[in-house]
Length: 129
Image: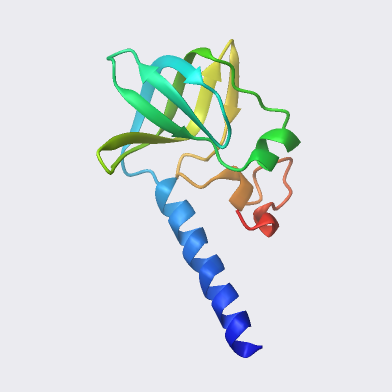
């Protein structure tokens, strides 16, 4: 029983550290372009400069509980940009589309589902994202 508990704790901590690493503020950029695939938990966009990005949107429940939606079409995303396996990825802080702003992470890059500021002030890290 102890080994199982220790394994689960270590797995959770490792995953949480990876998620926080991805949503860091080390290379924050604002990218404008067109979302051509709005599947969650990731979507895809073509930037105005022709680059392709995989957009990491976070957990589906976070979007559902906040009544967020992302449409295909024009978008402006501010977030942490990384190159992983030769592909561009963006971990959004904010997504602007159709005169609305979706806030996914704070300016430090901390996702709103992992702290008390997201989703109406409730803590959401209980969902093991």
